[in-house]
Length: 150
Image (tube, rainbow, N blue to C red; front, side):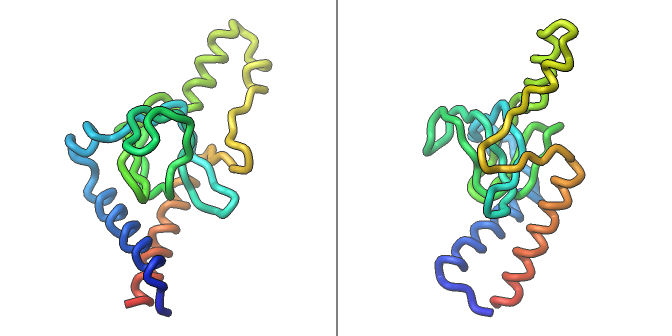
């Protein structure tokens, strides 16, 4: 298998992001990273795992509603995510927002649970274990394609 030059460039970028994620972010990485709040992991119509939410201080997009490039790794407890393009600091998740909404509705949990946040055309990933399996499968696939191209 021989990748086209543009595909090779993409795979090289993703391989660098994988290496960075495996090493983990430095303090400087996170200090420079945009903040993604009210975020959720999802699968795009093309089958790519990514995050969507509200970003602040994005280098190219400023402050906006976005979906990220391919998600490589995520550690919500440590407050970071790594995509093919960059690090993100994670703010409040959409799940935390939904919990806050339910609390603010003073016992109207049924009504609050009927509220769904989604990016049109994308399927939310609600299971953290499934998310980690999907990311591990993607990384293995990238490494396999890279090995076959060398």
